[in-house]
Amino acid sequence: MSQDEKTNQQWGGRFSEATDAFVQRFTASIQFDQRLYRHDIQGSIAHATMLETAGVLTTEERDQIIEGLNEVQTEIEAGTIEWSIPLEDVHMNVESALTAKIGITGKKLHTGRSRNDQVATDIRLWLRDEIDAISAELTRLQTGMVQLAETEADTIMPGFTHLQTAQPVTFGHHLLAWNEMLERDYGRLLDCRKRVNQSPLGAAALAGTTYPIDRELTAKLLGFEQPTRNSLDSVSDRDFAIEFCSFASLLLTHLSRMSEELVLWTSAQFNFIDLPDRFCTGSSIMPQKKNPDVPELVRGKTGRVNGHLISLLTLMKSQPLAYNKDNQEDKEPLFDAVDTVKDCLRAFADMVPAIEAKRDAMLEAARRGFSTATDLADYLVRRGVAFRDAHEIVGKSVAFGIEQGRDLSEMTLEELQQFSTDIDSDVFDVLTLEGSVAARDHVGGTAPNQVRQAATQALATLTGRS
Image 1 (cartoon, rainbow, N blue to C red):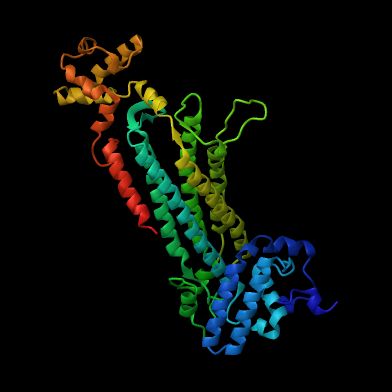
Image 2 (image 1 turned 180 degrees about the vertical axis):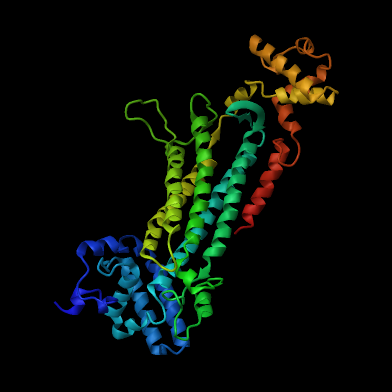
């Protein structure tokens, strides 16, 4: 057996025996990092371009390499290149395919770089593209949500605390509360992108390189804001992946909260909304069932994404500088977090605008539970009653209503006056559900005209993103 047959030709010069077959499979990452091929080739083209300007490659060699890399990409996308586990990762597989195509010139491509800065660059390029796709899908979800909120600005429903009826709100106001969560998520995503958009290329293995490279040029060619500032940190940093997963965990937490409400609202016990059949499934034994599987599954996937965040935090917590093989374990959690976020956003962006509000059921539910009790207390305070006394008066009125099986708005004036002589006939203006929501007429309030104004402003913000 020749030396080349015993070892990996890209790095095996000092080894005297071949890597164990199990160890090859155990340490290889090509099974999952092959999805980086496009960004690996993109980074290599920029690197070759820079090496030519630095005089390390001739113009002819640069052109050969770039043409060869483009051919390799075409073959990968056509499915005619077979990924090799002995070549370990996407970088070596691409380089090997290039060298097989153009010969010794292909071996010059790796001058002045290492797989350490190469993989850090590839992941950042890939994640930047995924962040852009996610931000677009998040915007699509928010736009559909806000448009539905505008449509449902007058739709009254019970607002809850402790899942108990608290005060009446509008369905549009509730939807805009969801949008506020997503708006913060969008801001976190853009903030994460700023730190992703730094170029590690040129940091080489850990200390930089002796070749006359131009890191500003490669950063510019790849659309990065600037090169990273420290070679040790450049190859070992995975903060950007952790930060993305932190964003993903918060986003999925918000989608999970929304999912929980959708699951409740579609139940026969609430009956507030209907989801189109295409977002639901049935039962194999109970023919009457229509299960809200999409929100249930999104709710379940939140734990999966939270787990990826913990995996990455744990992965990095004890690593000394600089690069360690542990870092290979960054990809699968990050890849799956991205895939899960994209799928969940797509599901919600398709589903939320199609929600059908059952307005009569919402209104009837708001009539139960004495949701205008606070309005009666506020009414008494405006007539000079101390708030604590007003609180007690309303509490006794509610107890009477429970006993009689009637809401406050269904009582007669005489019945209400037995609890306070400060109550007059104008009390019914505030005891109606419509009067209650209309009275919250301030920025952030649930009054229908405030909901419409807030929806208009939100849509203007969303439109301005493109």
